[in-house]
Length: 211
Picture 1 (tube, rainbow, N blue to C red):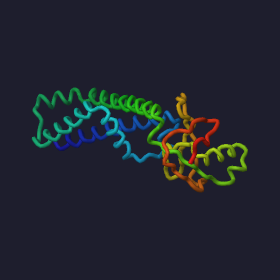
Picture 2: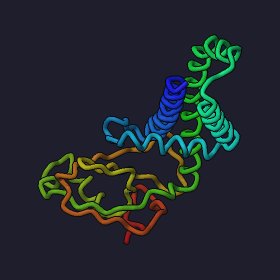
Picture 3: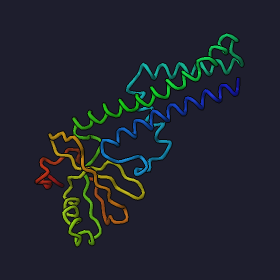
Picture 4: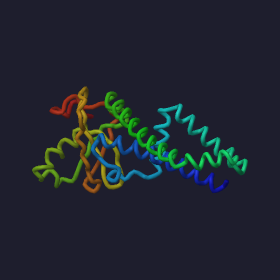
């Protein structure tokens, strides 16, 4: 029974990881960036899975009931013979269905969350001003971007040790895709996170209004 309980807990953890990974993968896909580039800690996928389950309370209740049932069976020390045979027979199909369903659940939740964030003008992503290496201003291709980064209209998507990921939405405009800028932290001289969570009014006039 101990081996069964260990296997069941391992499968549930793997399922939660799959749900969280699917959510993160599909959510950031809307910003055209992959999880390898973001370098998200693996334990964060478990947190993402609980975000998904939070939006599906019935499914969360089912998961909690299954966890409680495993605890009861573990305390009893053994399963009835009929239950054991039935479990062995359906386990392969059940595992396949659970993992596929978890993947699709993460995908659908990510889409709903992105659309909600987009309609609300990305309330979790502050505007930022970024000052980069002066050498950028001398490059004909990077000079325009160098000026735009200091104007405060780019929004912070995520930041890791090596890269800052920024995107530039326009207020009341719902684009099919968002341009993403990856700025190496080694090229950043200063970064200021602004206490503002609304997009600039125009892509042609990104200074309005910047603080």
